[in-house]
Image (cartoon, rainbow over all chains, first blue to last red; front, side, top):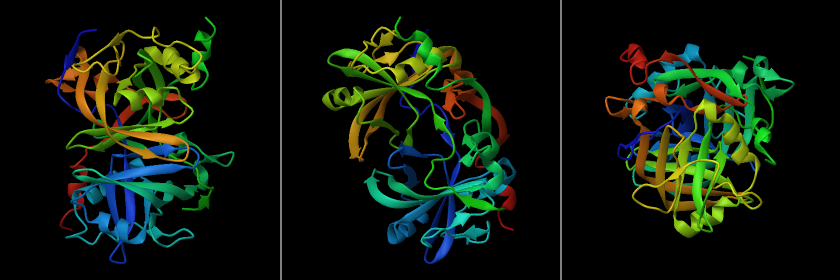
Length: 184
Length: 184
């Protein structure tokens, strides 16, 4: 294939998540695309927050953050909490907050799936704080479970790719389709 | 909504990427779901590799890794290089390798988009090495560019969610739809 070197651009998809934190004692929410898993065992998740954000000080102070997966009917509010800063705007009432067993980071009741993370490490990049958190508790709407496990098709999360997009059709089976090429 | 606490499960979507590295001087490839962006400026990307993997030593030795986005017609080979270890199986011939300006990590010609990363930091988790890399060069198939920029709809990457899945329909505009809620 004819490939072109196009500089240092990111390519691919990002998830759409709303990070939650307590800042000066009030819930604050921030939409992020740079977030994801780092480890299955123990379960570890990270978020990347630009150092200009208001949220970072609250995560550092409390040692906890939440990761909330908004559904497509929440797209306006999701985009809104990414557009305005907690410095200027009180975002505590945009969503209905709830807390898990540790009340150091709020979660969003309207989101079908939420995880509460305890900060175990941070990475100081030039313009971003990377918060690495061990998952403490995961909350999922009952109607989004199949056999007691979270079902990504029922959660129907958004991606940050071509604006906000949904998960599309299945095109293969993991840890399975490649077996056809083994021992050849 | 009635929420249930279901333990410490990961929820949401992961990208499907194939990490590339030189191990003992030969190209090796490994499919990963825990990978993603960490910073726009400078452009920084991470991959998480379980410490059991053969690839890790090669990344540590050379200081570089690549991230390759496979297309759906590559699903069998993508799954295959995630199923078998380079310890037992020479994976150097599964794909056509190419190199950028630095020949310390191979990239996959069959993939529509590839990035070459230089390791700038690592995080030592209990079972995973997190390699944090600054993007050195991005290569994209010419037919996947729109106005010279990578077009995620043309690249059509796979997600690791419900097996392998594609990106679905657009459901909102980023940095735009939320403006309707501003100054209210």
